[in-house]
Image (cartoon, rainbow, N blue to C red; front, side, top):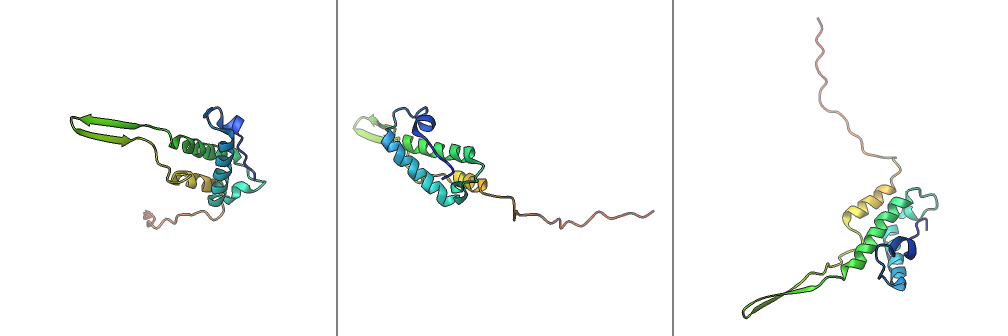
Length: 126
């Protein structure tokens, strides 16, 4: 794979409490899912590795933080309410991250273009 993420250099500075064995599994999963939405990142000639790594690292760190949080208990008299403040993990990548990964794979060929359909300004002949 053209992109590699290392626990010590890429994740530990942001999440020092992350278990290295758990980090290895998270890295494997994140790279595999990123390769599904943007297959070009697995090619040896991929030149935008730093940008892809930043997107993938952000998703891994968000995943690591998803379980943290606390339950807050509120009460007034006999009424009690518990609010769970943990973030739920719905998917590895946000839609914007998927779009960003896919943009990294675009080569510039076959891009959309526009055709001006507005009539030209009239030419006044003296």
